Structure formats: structure tokens, C-alpha cells
Amino acid sequence: MKFLSVLVLLASLSTTAYAQDDLDAEIALLRQSAHTDRKILIMGNVGFTADESAQFWPAWNAYRTAVSANGDRELALIKDYAANFEDMTDLKAKKLLTDYFSIEMQNVALKQDFAKKIDTFMPTKKVMRVIQVENKLDAAINMQLATEIPLVK
Image (cartoon, rainbow, N blue to C red):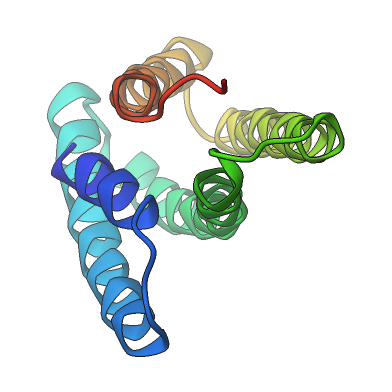
């Protein structure tokens, strides 16, 4: 969760090109840490058999890579919002909303595809548990974002 508050705080600041490189490097490190933390939480909350584990982690890594790419879109959206927050127009708000809904729909589609894939080699109750853990972690991230990002004026 440290990742989110730092990310939002840094994304909301006006930066120079040099500082942007520093920000991007910091975000990359924080994302890697968040990825590792998420993996540990899944391991601690889902009891995988050896066979399930051998198939699960490659599928999960591919899923998280796709989610991370969509996260790049979300980060760009947050930066765009921050850059336009003070002088938001209806036109800009419409564009941000369109982008936001696109990102959300993509996240749902990625999670749905991931669940279908792992359901081929794990009991469905276990698939549900994985998705529940993912959802709880996503909810915690969204809650942090909600507390950090101000409402539009």
C-alpha cells in the first residue's frame, strides 16, 4: 500500500523531465515490491498442491503482467487528472471518464480470463479464493487512491 500513496503523491506533483525519470524509476521499484507482497499474500491464503502451483504461478505472472500494463494506463490517467485538476473542463472530464471506464472494463476482462484459465487445473472454490484475494488487494488499493485523489471541482 506504500506504493499507492507515494505514486499518487508523486503523480500529482508538477515535475521536470529529470524528476520524471526519477519518478518512473521509483514507480518501477514500488511496483516490484507490491508484486512481491501480493504474491506472498496469495501464497499465504491459498493452499496450492505442487501440480497446481506449477501451473498457477506462470498463469498468475502473465495475468499480473497484463494488469500492470493496464496499470500504466491508470497511472497516465491519474497524471492527466492531476495536470488538469485546477482547470478541468467538461470536455476533459468526458475524456477522463471514457478512459477510466475503459481501464476498468479491461481489468474485469483480464480477471475473468485469468479465472477461466486457472479453473482448468484447480477446483473452482480455489479459483474463487484466488479472485477474492485479488479483489481484496485491489479494493485496498482503490481505497487508498480514493483518499489521496481529490474530487473534481
